[in-house]
Image (cartoon, rainbow, N blue to C red; front, side, top):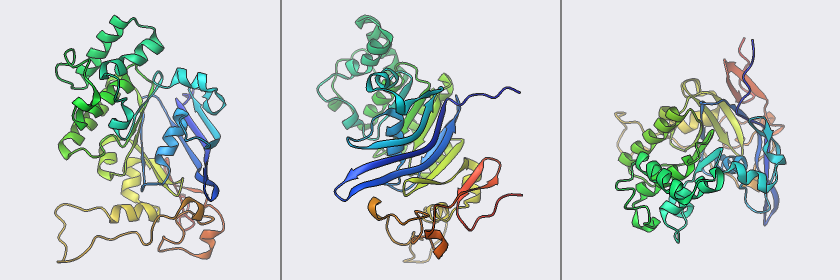
Length: 328
């Protein structure tokens, strides 16, 4: 039987940052694949490496950062590409919705010009053609009176509208892969739902692959079929979302769920939600071995020896913990 080549294949991804304390590993030993039309969620606390992983896929790492390992997109090794070659992919075959739309949008250019720019750059459309296509995109993502507001500036829109505009920009050229980095940050619950439904609908409509980054477990549960849990720059658990959320094999995954408020659950007066002990260490202070060692209630000396190997728990469900046993 013929096998389908993944659209995206990440192997042993490692990212090193230059800090005042020297070079530190911000991401290491991250592996995942993504097929066309598939959806993947990245979850974990702030600083766990989710956004850096996404920026590495885009070739937009901070100055001085170095990436190693392999990132293959449609069979092409991205880490070997020149900046010029990466520019031909960014905004064309790979689109990204950034976390904060007010910083992602250029305040001195109209929103119409910014949505139309990738169409002219990558598809060679004339100004009139790009304008017509941009207006259609803005209407598709829910911007009222798009033709009349084509020449408006970012500050003339609300936060939710600006997020819709960044989605239109990311989708302008019909990318094969869409990366959405915390696309509902700072939005109220109603707007969050609208934005998520918009992204899900567009992904299904256009057959795109989706990487959704979020710290919100509810958002991930409702939006993606597969989930990768990150801590300390590495993947600690991954697999089908239902399996990861149902089994919660890794102690860190268990801690994330325990700290989540649940409607309808009675608590004693003054009782607090369970928390994960300690704080996320600085990158330069991450322990050797398992990055969760020390904060984990089950820490033992062997946890500090080496990064635990991945243990297969069920079909496509794996985790890194020395306490886990392989499925028969």
